[in-house]
Image (cartoon, rainbow, N blue to C red; front, top):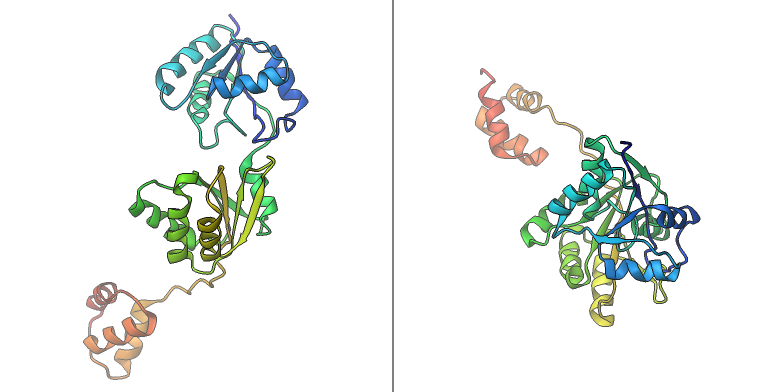
Length: 275
């Protein structure tokens, strides 16, 4: 028996007209549509008069439904995978089904289409030649701070997603960690109240504290402009001071202060130098 095909079908991120002719054709021809939220997807299907069986596939049934869908694909059923909005597999459960299908040697066909991350990037006014997609940061404050500290050092533009109930907390952390770094925040992309705010984290925090927080958000962060510090040869720096007559203890202090290095690190290197 010939196996079925899994089609990855991007759906509009807001405006229902942002769907490709090819996606509509596939949705009309497949045997089954696997949707993140069937109540949401049925509105799209009704809009385009598409009558196909729907099944739910989301984070709460990902394991058991994944097994079921792979079995159907193995039996020759053609399935279209859709998310609530945008490209399936990006920050949603579709990632797991795609991996399982590939491992089961099932044909996976990706269709191009709308995605919030690239849409927000191109309207941000920030560099688009090199960028990284980070997705959602951790809900835990400690982990979120750690992730932002990593992002602070990125040289390329970074794209983040954030839910409305966590936006202000994220912006507060950005004020503390990113300072005056440029950011762009897009909400309600392609919808009636589409908005993009560009400024610093502090300006964004003040704006959304005043206006309120509604919609789903894409935050684009400017890359770091700081020059990378050259790698310091600690042993060479220590020897330079030793040759000037300083004691090893004094040399360690000098190198730590001059190059802003951890004392323990410099001290360990000093132990390897014979006086």
